[in-house]
Length: 120
Image (cartoon, rainbow, N blue to C red; front, side):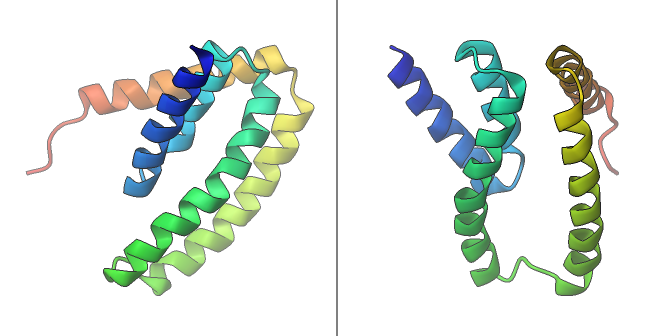
């Protein structure tokens, strides 16, 4: 049964990654809540998962003209800096605190999506 759950989680997160909307977040929830993995281990797996799925989706987005290099370059540069700082912080935090921080983040994003006003 756990193989089927892993297969379904991989398929669902793959679809979300293809859309570019954070399949890794769902994968982290699956790995920590259902598969029982430690938060830091799940994060490492998520990073490895992200590389091929993002590369695959990127090919299709590029093919369809959905890339803007002038917007991407500053985002990438700032993202690299933020990633380095966050990785350092995440690996130095206690796992229990890291899980709580991730939970608060998920609650914030969920509430934001539920309560935001529709654009006019």
